[in-house]
Image 1 (cartoon, helix red, strand yellow):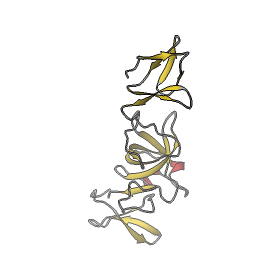
Image 2 (image 1 turned 90 degrees about the vertical axis):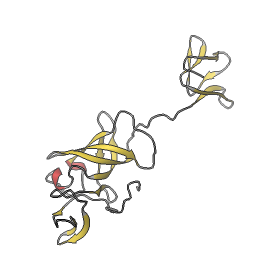
Image 3 (image 1 turned 180 degrees about the vertical axis):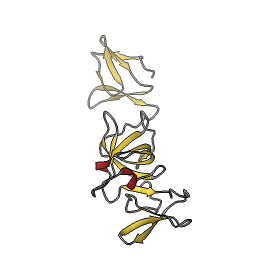
Image 4 (image 1 turned 60 degrees about the vertical axis):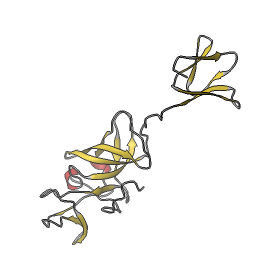
Length: 188
């Protein structure tokens, strides 16, 4: 079945998924296989290809930090946790400083740096994609030393958990997920 193909007269059957009524005729709107839903008495088309993913509020994503300003972090979504499909419209989003942590954050650069791989939750998909990293399982999953770009390792510091570079010894603070460094990019 091709889009625009005539399926039936509108008196014979109702339009369903993948179909539409135009001038008294039911026509297909998708490339796919035609079936009849007997319960609804409707014409249905099962698409041959999967539809692209549209992110919605509450989805958990893995993203890479692309730019950090004083009050905002800009990221590129790499994938949606648990979903193996491409995202519609690109995956650029923002995390406002107030959505980084439950603790007070003075500057976004204190919690994220360019190249960090993070887990975040979508809070507002429209008109622009906004996210949060508030929560135990949200935050950086992998961060890199600002001195030598080597991956940082979680260690205990004087004021709690910090990240330390095993190569140069530089110590940094980040908003990290509980499973930082465990490679759990697809865990909730």
